[in-house]
Every structure is written in structure tokens, then in C-alpha cells.
Length: 323
Image (cartoon, rainbow, N blue to C red; front, side, top):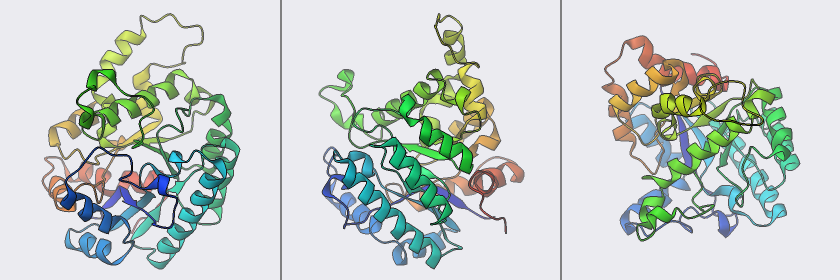
């Protein structure tokens, strides 16, 4: 069965130092850091060998966090986004059956981000974009980003919202335990909150055909649908969203399994938002391909559901030709 993995990272050493994937993280095991860094900068040989070893047909490649969202200078963000997207496009062209790409966007300037998206999709052949959460504390519900949402909807491509290694604000409850502010907990809180901002900022009422992808089994949100709806019913808002939160999650969001290789979590998420909303991902090279492949191999689901998660949903959302 074909396997398409959607959250697979790379990095280019030529980019600005602000984009360095380990420049903003809490201290990590040196051996693990070396393992990850060697794989981030390898866009073909080692990556393809590991894909072949574990039966992964396609990596959907994206510039690793914090990416261009870390830049404080807009011109640097525009430059690095263009360079990253051009290198990515050449990589995809060299291996068209193995790689697909998500564009990096200079969200420091919403108009420039929309233009880079259009260039990346129409001229470079990329199939959507990935943004690392906030940009200097600014979120995508800001009405200035309507130009970007309009372009996403016009082109019919998804936007993956990924955690940002640079926190917009510290979670006080984690003071003294800052290592929990990253991938184990804090990042999911941040991106899940960003997704709720989009719902309550009425982004999907203005752009009902927009599609957002969330990694890590939906950043907690699928497991909170009942709670979100029950609390929503008690709110008094001057400009409320047209639908309940769960309805947007089932209409405008896709999720991936990246880093959450749990059968029970996947089944619960599918019950909440639908099997047609879930796509396979590894989170390479931060997570192990072997673990993700075994997770997929042992899913206690009908073959039709496994096919949807493994490749059919991704083919539909990203416009990848079936084989």
C-alpha cells in the first residue's frame, strides 16, 4: 500500500542563522542532535535509503521550524523563503515520484506571503505551504492575512500550521520546567490555540473552502470537540463564528499522525472528526521512521481506512496523482 508522509523536514545551511533548527530549543542529547542535523541537510541519499528501508513512498518536504518565521527582518524572510522554495522545487523535480513540497512563506509581510505562495504553486510546482505558528507574536487570524487566505482558497492548496521553536510567550505554569514547553506539551497548546483563533476570528466564515493541516494528531483538538462545543454554547460574543468549533474541525481541518504513534489516539480522533480527515506523517528526522512504519503496519482498522490514512486523503488534499 502506498505511503505518503506529510511532515518531513529539511534545512539549508545557507539560510540565515535565525532559521537554525537548534538555535532556539532547550538543551538536548548531543548524540540525538547530531543524528537529526545530519538528516535535515540531506535532501536525497540518506533520506531515500531510509524511506526505502521502511516502505515510505513519498516525503512531503518542508523547511524545518522555526524557518523564515524566526526572521525579524522582512527582506531576509522574503529572501530565505524564495531560496528554500527554489531548492525544494529542484529536489522535487529530481525525484518526482518520491518527493512533494510545501512552500515556506514570509509571513512578516502578508502580501509578500501571498505572492510567494502563488509563485511556489504555479511556477515551482509545490502543493501548499507550511507556516511555523506565529510570526513575532502575530497570528493568521489577523485580517491583514486575508490576502493570504484568499490566495490559498483560490489555488485550492492547504496550509500546514506547524509549531514554532521560538515561543511567542512563556507558559507560566511551566516555569522551572521549560523543557515541557516544546514538543512534548507546549507546542501543541500553542498551535491548538492558533487554530481556535482562526475559528473564532471567523477565517473559515470568510474563506469556507480553506484547508488547514495540523500535525501531532491535531494538537489536542480532536479530543476536545465535545468540550469545545459545550463551552461555546455558553459564550456571548458580538461576532460569533457561524458554526460550532467541531464543525470547522470536520470541514476545514486535516490532521496528521506525526509523532503520535498511538492506535487509540488515532481511533479516537477519527471518531471525533472523521477518517477522511487523518493523514500519515513521520516527523522525520525528529521521530524514527521505523516507529511510524510499525504504527501504520499494525493499525487495527479495515484496509479501506488504512488506505485513507496512508495515501488516499493526502492524494485528495494535495492533488497528488494516484498510482
